[in-house]
Image (cartoon, rainbow, N blue to C red):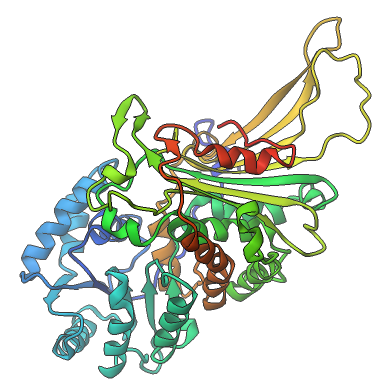
Amino acid sequence: MDTTTSSENPLRAGMRLERVAPPCVVVIFGATGDLTRRKLLPALFRLTEQRLIPAEFAILGTARHLMSDDDFRAQMQAAIKEFAADEDFDEATWQSFAKRLFYIAGEFDDAALYGKLKSKIDEIDTECNTRGNRLFYLATAPDFFGVIAGQLGQAELARPKEGSWTRIIVEKPFGHDLESARTLNQQLAEVFEEKQIYRIDHYLGKETVQNLLVFRFANSIFEPLWNRQYIDHIQITNAEAIGVEGRGAYYEKAGALRDMIQNHVFQVTSLIAMEPPASLSANGVRDEKIKAMQSVRPMPAEQIEKFTVRGQYGPGTVLGDTVPGYRQEPGVDPNSSTETFAALKLHFDNWRWAGVPFYLRSGKRLQKHITEISIQFKDVPHRLFTDADAPLQPNVLVIRIQPNEGITLRFGAKLPGQAMRIRSVNMDFRYGSSFGVKPPEAYERLLLDCMLGDSTLYARRDMVERGWEIVSPIIDAWRKAAPDFPNYEAGSWGPQAAFELIERDGRKWRRL
């Protein structure tokens, strides 16, 4: 008998298929930092509330600051209340969760710390029955990644015991150029097997990014059109209204190209450009992603200026507030040549995408916060409606990653009346309104995947290095030429050169 009531959303049917993590202890290096407070502990607490983490589970934090287990628990309780404020705080769940929180202070380059960690992990294994399963999370400055990995190896913490597993999550940035990325990968490989290494990119944990695979390969109406015969060009925009938010010292060493394009934007680009995988296994998906990125056409040094644009914001107004320029931000050189905006034009030299340009842009202090993929189809081959009162607009498929995650398809329709008047209309799908449920936070999905041993949404070594291979010639060329900064006003859509980049080809950036 059908027991579905009228108040239930039929689109939510079958959604209770969540996977439950196995027993394990999560060791967080940098446990007193912002990432742990804002993302990791709230995510682990929400997974606990959802019963996706078993009772046989524990968290062991470590950092330089001296404190007791109770002090650490109090700090994490405050963090969870602040950064999971959209949900009711469940005191009973917290009491159970808090009992499994532990802390050890120490220096990351001190071998004595790792001896204490090993003893504590063994103790937790016995007390909490975590069965020898260990997840090490490096929520530290990048300078410590190789150091911590090496110390874990020396302390014999990197190799799993028989019948159990050991994994390590490494936060971005994965190096600051190709050479440093290769060095880091080699340092990790000397201690861990590649299958143990999880390079996290939180963009891949977003629900809409994951849905790209479903959208492309679970719907027969789109994949036949997903090629050079029907698609004119693709735009990927990652726009932020915020500035460097007190991270000027870090951003001075990074810039938009390193901070966003090389990792987040390239990961999304690869999902759009990839061929259908043989299976949805981790390697099946990641093999196709790297194959797509390997087909990106190299940029000769003398043509870098033709295919790239960089910018830096000056003072302006964002969302009604007057804001300073990048060079006036704390920790920033008053004569800084670091870019806060980058735009690229890429070509994929393969059968599917030959002749289809990909326009990528990412910037800070732009007009609004939005990340989306815009796929513009070619014009109709023969214009039947020559008497229409307005020119026909091409069909556009828009995939919004943030905010208001969803998908929009634009197509032409006739206005009511006797005259042949055609206007563009949208078919709009939004996750929140369609399913009536808030998507999980990216770190919830990615942490759970790692505990389950699913690396599909994590970056593989070859993908990281390929991203650096693509941007390295750009970095070298930009380093040799002094930029005329600032060249765009905060609250605008970037430098004029970015508009010229796409308009030279007879196209325009989508209005956001």
